[in-house]
Amino acid sequence: LPLLTMRAIIITFLLFALVTVSYSAGTHKFYGRAFGTVSDWYVKDSSHSHHLEVNFNPMQDGSTGKTFPKFQANIDVRSRDGTPQYAALFNNTDLPAGILSKLEGPPGLFQISKTQGLDYHSFISASKFAPVQEGDLVALLEKYLKNAQQVMLFGQVYEDANGAVGIHDIHRIMGSLGQTYGDGGFFVNDGTDTYAIFLHFKGEF
Image (cartoon, rainbow, N blue to C red):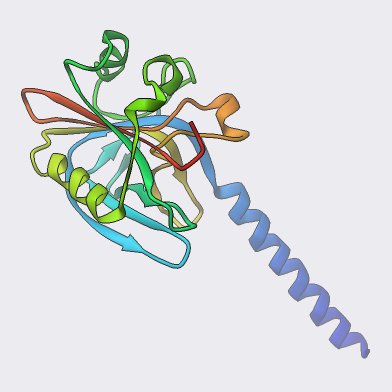
């Protein structure tokens, strides 16, 4: 190949590598909890994901003081293979005091340790879960979101190089992440009572 062509190929490759490395370096993930109020939500389905996307009002990072004007929660309502999620519904009279105490912190986004989070096996038996079809799970989540004065979520927090900030994996967390992360969870408070929905995929409890 001519020298100029070779140089162009090398430069293109280096630029591609630089962009790829920059994107990876810009991605930040951790186990955390996000407590706040929501503005709206909608179902977002694609070929690889079926979830309820919940938009929060501005969310402040409790550690850095940074405020995220747009903060999203992505709640899986169906597995990728089409099987339903398994759900367990609790209210404040069903929840152990140790779980309710984890909801007493200030609003905002915080990175937390595994012990500060949720461990399904410590307070839920497998018999509490039942398979819920996508439409029914969306309706259940919306029922509690409509009256929520505060929404409290546990899961994996992300901030990527494209500026998207939010929380997902709001379900039982398995695999390598499960070694350092607690489980995900969905809680709402309507001003009087607290309700919780815990989720897991088929065969993951």
